[in-house]
Image (cartoon, rainbow, N blue to C red):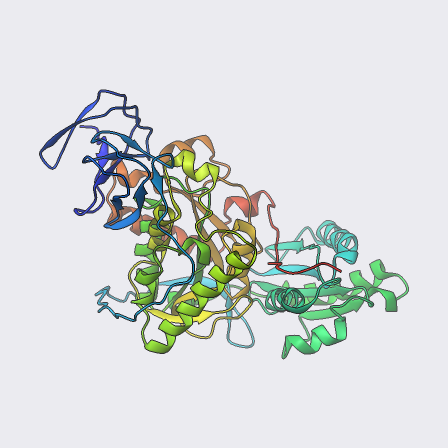
Length: 496
C-alpha cells in the first residue's frame, strides 16, 4: 500500500505529504480521520488539529514557527500561514545531553594518497591558484596547456581556480582571501600546486608564501608574473617540475578514520529532513565511530535548531564557542539591517519548507547525534577529529569552498531541487526524492528518496558507505566528470 503521509515525531501537530494529495482526501492519522481542505503537494505539511492564531506549529518535535491566523484541521500549512519565531541575539544555557551511539568499529579502508607530512588525500590533482584575479587568464591558459601536453596521465585532474579577489580588499575580507588560498595550497587532494601572482596586489606573493607556513617545495611553486619575461613559458617550466613529482604518486590502503567529509545542503525541500539529511546524519555518526571526521557549516541555517547542537558540545568551552558562532552571525545579519529569519529561498518554499526553523531542524540532521568536538572560524583548518562546526554562510559555493578549505576531502551535498555545481574537492549530490534523481542523473550521484519508498535507512546507509569508499578511492562524482569546479570566498566589507 502506498505511503501517503509521514508524521515525523509523536509530538508533531502537522504531517508531511509523501505524494501529491488532492483536496477532499481522507487520511487516518493516530486514529483521527482527517479530510484535506486543499490539495497538498508532496513534501508539504497539513494540519493535524485546529490551530488558534499565534499557536506553535510542531514538526520534528520542535516549533517551526507559529500560525499567522487560525487554521483548521486538514489545512495546507505553508509559508502563507506559518511565520517564524526567530528573533535577534539570545542568551543560552548549557544543558549537556548524554550521547551513546553504540556503533561498532569496522576495519574499513579506502585507497588514498599518503602525503609526506602524514596527511591523506583522496585525489592527486595539479592546481593552478592565482593570488589575485588579475592573473586568472594566465592561470586558465596554463591549465589548458598542461592538460593538452600530458593528457593528465598519472594525475586525477589539472585545474585552475580563478577568483575575483586578492586586491582592493581590507580587513577581514583580505584575511579571508589569504586563508582560503592558503588552505588550498596545503590541501592534501593537491599533489602539485603552482601559485600565480601578479606582483603589485594587496595579497603580495612573498608575504602570502610566508603566511602559508611550511610546505613541500618539491610540489608547490610560486611565480610572480611581473618579475619574469614570458609568464607562460616560466609557468609551464614550473608546472612540468611539480607534475613530474605528482605523477609518480600511487594510492595506498588508508584507514577510514582518516576520511574528512563536509556536510552541506542546498535547494532543500520537504523531504530533506526525512530522507537525505538523516542519511548523512547516520553516515556521519558511523564515520565518527570509525575515528573519522565530519564538518557542519551554514550557520544561518542552524538558527532555530542551535540549542540542539549547543547541548551536544563535549564541554562548556565548546558550548561558549558555539554561542559565539551563532550570535556573531546574527550580529552580521542585524548590522546590515536584515532579519535573522530571512530564509528560506523561493525554491525551499516551493519544496515544502515554510520557515527558517523548518529548514534548520532538517538541516542540522546532517550531523547525526555525535558530540561536537570542535568549533572553527571561517578559513580555519581542522585540528580535532569527530564532529566539528564551521563558521560560513549558507550560500552553496561559499560554504562548500569553506568546507574544502578546512580540510574536508569531499563535500556531501543533499538537495531536493538539484544543482550541478562543484567546489575544488569532489562535491557529491544526494537527492532527497527519487523524481529528482530520475530527472537529473547528470547531477545526482546518490538517491536517498528510496527511504520513503521501499528501502530501510540501514540498507540505504550501507550502500552509501560502500559508495563513499569507492569515491574516496578514486571513483568520480558528476561534478568532476563534467568539470564543474569553482571556488567562492566570503566577502563582507568594502571593495577599494
